[in-house]
Image (cartoon, rainbow, N blue to C red):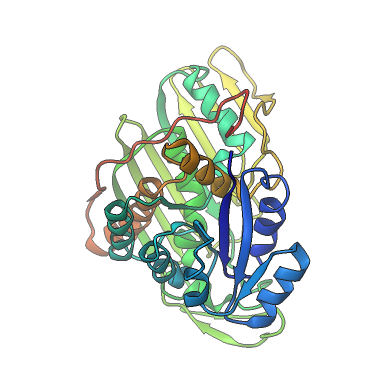
Length: 366
């Protein structure tokens, strides 16, 4: 198979794991030919460290590179839409970090342009392709817990101002626990259970300001612009009912929790921000949970597997698993939680999302 030439826009902290994996374990599928960052030193450092042929310092330059087929957009969330639109307008496929956009309208623009031009568009998170969640999907599809009745999911912590070097974004428009961590949980859930039909939710801002206690901005006060505690109900198209809480307002060291309840048992799903286990299963005729081995690959930090799958899909003429229908459905969901609280009513989801087939147990994405 001819490799897909990839250009990376954004050389911040998260670029390291992408570059490590795309130039390493996925190098037989993709070829990273260029990196770009508005801060030249970052682009040059990434170019040198990972042996990338070209470095650019403006988005316009990398979009004009005719050798590049696919743009990996790992800029800040507010730039996901404009950079993706630039890539699509330049005739390139686009894969971006989560979320697809910070509002529905920007997501709709991207999806419409991609479909108009016949280009692939999608994005993170790709943790649902990890061994842990794929194993859980197989357990559910093979009937180990019967029909899915309900799901409970929660992400709870006290925010990022105690450890992040520049945490202000997490409390601005496009931030908050739903847009920061919600994509991991919602992407996991729609892959395990299917599309969501409607949402009913409540939100609050518990602390109107936040005090940064991490360096180098220790002592700075942040104004909170977005809800920091979101709790709601989801009605899935298959009839299952789900609850989801995302919070930056509580003190809790058990922040990752996804429980799937079936007619014949229950399943404890691993942290959707990771790729591996553990997985625990309770059968209706048993009294205790038992550990279940992870049977799929991609159990370590495999960030970039979604990009590799998109590249492979491009060559095979199929839809990538982390496609724009999925990333838009997750965006629509996140917006619906906020909209429901604001309007005080149930919010219907856009119809049309259908999850892609699970990975092959024997072949992975290959």
